[in-house]
Length: 480
Ligand code: GLN
Image (cartoon, rainbow, N blue to C red):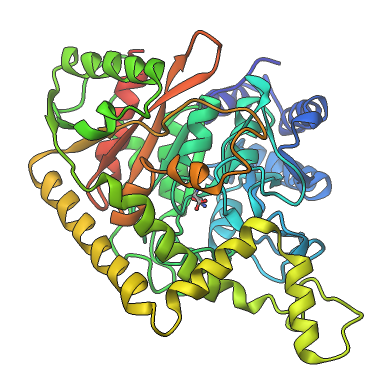
């Protein structure tokens, strides 16, 4: 079977009876088996996915199938699915079975997507290389000595190596966009509050957002319209109506450009010495292409770049230290059974259940929130976040789309940066901007460098303007 790159293709073959869901799911199971060494899946849901394939096939035959019928999707292992294990790739939750489904899973199932398994990620989504996972790193299929990116590394590699059509990830500071960039996929992070976080294991609640990793913009649009929208279980989700994103994409056949956009390139992000030269070159070529397509491209200055990473890490570690306090060995999760006192039970359960990076962040978060340091760090970072957001909103008053790299380099070697947390954190510089501002952003593939590693560009837009981002991305890739 060939690689399918969009649901439209699969649905076409299903409708023509050239394909059955049984065949499709068998194909993906085989792909997963053949790529086991990449370590993308923490678990394959053989039984529930096979059962779903049978049920949805029957619905296809009687004309009652939902709009995602034929979509075989993997979910990051921090998204709850009733009756299935969910671990956040942590020893802390190694055998934890979710008693309920997240809103995103419910919405996928309601439209007849087949959930094929749960995907490896950095522990509690903290990391940018998938190396903090208790279950080991995920390997990049473009070069198996290199990282998949993170934290949704399993999601990116599962799509890259054709183990499922699409995957859900979560993006707190780049975890959908950066692994997608490292693996040559499309990584889409909607506006904060566009998609419900109910049933998604919390890392930093004022940043966390579910996003998609796909091979086509059409699939990203379709998934977004299924997943987005108000939810009584998450009051931070916007009440704004959900547009029919997929039906508003510019038609393929006409190779038509959506209305000319005002595109602003964030100058300091491109001129930075830290940016890999081949990445820069590919982005400059893409910018030329935007111009040729009739868009107006200008350069703008964004001089708050150096504040992004510190602000992000102060606020997210503070939120994480609070969110992760629930894993105490008493309520649920890993428990040390030798402890002689309650205090000892808390201490040893948390010391043994969490990995190094998670502990580092809990400590950092507890520090910035502690009496005496709260004003100097946490409160100050809140103020800087507001300034960043205001500056971005100002730029987006005069421009439709902002452009920057996704990451300073293509996928690096496994083990290369792991000893130095600061190097790792600095690599998030371009993705945390959209997360701090809460705006939608997408990572789009730009082909490979000379060594065969995927390159990528990032586009961002105003809050809740996902449609513009999807339309521009669609026509851009169509003409690639
Ligand atoms: N690399 C970033 C971090 O470690 C982003 C993670 C994420 O988006 N979940 O926090």
